[in-house]
Amino acid sequence: MSATSNNRMAVRLVGLVVLMGAMAWAAVPFYDWFCRTTGYGGTTNVAERASDVVLDELVTVRFDANVAKGMAWKFRPLQNQMTLKIGETGLAFYEAVNTSDRVIAGTASYNVSPDVAGYYFDKIQCFCFTQQVLQPGERVEMPVSFYVDPEIVNDADAGRIRNLTLSYTFYETDLPEDKQASLTPLTPAPVN
Image 1 (cartoon, helix red, strand yellow):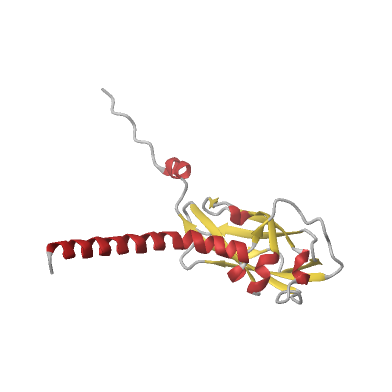
Image 2 (cartoon, rainbow, N blue to C red):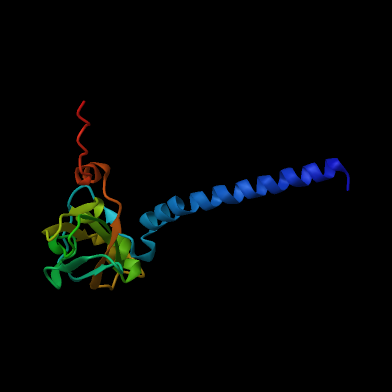
């Protein structure tokens, strides 16, 4: 092989590596967008306001709570389930308790099952939209405001679903910088 052929092959291989890296980098945001758009995997929607339509059909929403392995929080729903009309706004509460002796930040991931119903589950407000920071021993009640979109009854796959489960899992995350700074002890300036 000539040097020119080797150079072309090297450029092609580098280009392939760059392309694969770009595709790997784009996979997470693309998958997130795909799940939010289609409701795939039970991903819910975010609504700016309550539904304008309330049907005379009932749906039961069960509530589930989990923490990732090693996270020193107790996390539970304050109600096991709620029955409401399709399109009616529900308000549920979860409780989190930091059982450790240190400040812990957490972020909740969520889904709805059956998965196909996730597209029709709309959250108006949720503790899962922001990071939660709990002091040692702190207990908080966290609300989630939601409704089941009346369009669910027109879906060939989800139209008969009348029992849903809203599930959250909290994962420990890095403390925000402002919280970390407050934990760092101040070192006194040297006296001259």
